[in-house]
Image 1 (cartoon, rainbow over the protein chains, first blue to last red):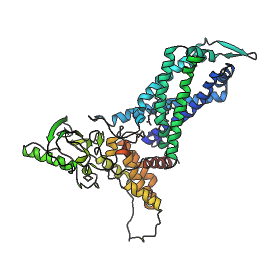
Image 2: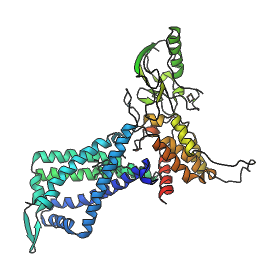
Image 3: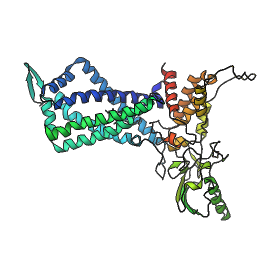
Image 4: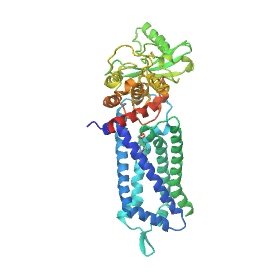
Length: 222
Length: 246
Ligand code: HEM
Ligand code: FES
């Protein structure tokens, strides 16, 4: 079939749409996670409970897994095809002026991918499937005390290091990815493209430092 | 200037190539890169050795035949120029210069530094034209075209098809070339009629020939001797989405 999806441009279209969806997800995720810094553990635990049980969020969760899967699968296809397009490389490595992190999208993706698995096992799988998460009672209802779990996790030095390193990878990925997605969508404009690039850098710094602050600050002050 | 040249030599498509090292002396900084290679070749011929094969034609930066990967950059260290317009003053006395052919699966090496770029011709054949039944010459003002559109079309039409975009791209993607050829026609009323079919066919041919996928690294734009803009790639993407989805 001659659809958009078996064209090189179409593959990138899917990656960019999925990527932008993941970018919006990260903001929501960060917003909720920052609640862990509040004095009371209740808001964080209640928010986590809401995200784990609300039916609308359940559908969003499936969409999110789909988005990750599509992005990863197409990322692998695209990267493999790109390797095959130049079977014999140059002796002298490329000196062209180009966006630095764009050269390492696959490498940073592998870092994010491995981290994703570890991170899911760390909290998601534990809360959903394995169990053993402490419980608390608010107004006569039972809640998972995920806040306590998170804080305990980030009291371990090497866990903090793993998170910081993986988030650096994510930051590099986003630095190129954010503006790249707009170009892939065909949105290139003499006035707006520089603004998008600026927003991308702002977003990247905000999200990377925001997420990093959680393990680091929990380790030192919580 | 005295220079050490490391040049890729390969007898034919199948042969295993290798780098050969040559010395050239007394090169004028005002000579062009290709003139410097001419001097080297004369030395080789004088010694009854095979000269180094490289592509060239106009030597004035307009035909797109020349194209060498010099010290890790297509068309060498200068920006906005072809290899034939690169001058030796861009190098220093005593430099070692590595010269390689374009590397991409759709551009097989024919000999030494000459690659087969007929893949580009195939992309043009797939749709890079306007089918018109030519009649008399139309009146100059019969088809008004805005200055802005005319400029964009003209900028895209500056592409000489040298292949530096493919050579510089880490993915060996031909998107800059194809998008320039799509834009130069689709911005004008004569080209708009076949625009949807054109973009579909040209992208399909590009994919079929084995060029890589664009990841927006920007190397092509930086190396293009005609400084074709990435905005043409975005336009081509828009046109393809519109043609395929809408
Ligand atoms: C929260 C996580 C992630 C976000 C927000 C994200 C976002 C993005 C965005 C926006 C792009 C640019 C797409 C385009 O130019 O059209 C991109 C590219 C890419 N992503 Fe991700 N990504 C994430 C995770 C991953 C993972 C886990 C993988 C694979 C294991 C991956 C693989 C890739 C690859 C290979 C590219 C390169 C393609 C290109 O340069 O355009 N990404 N990503
Ligand atoms: S020989 Fe014609 S552009 Fe260089």
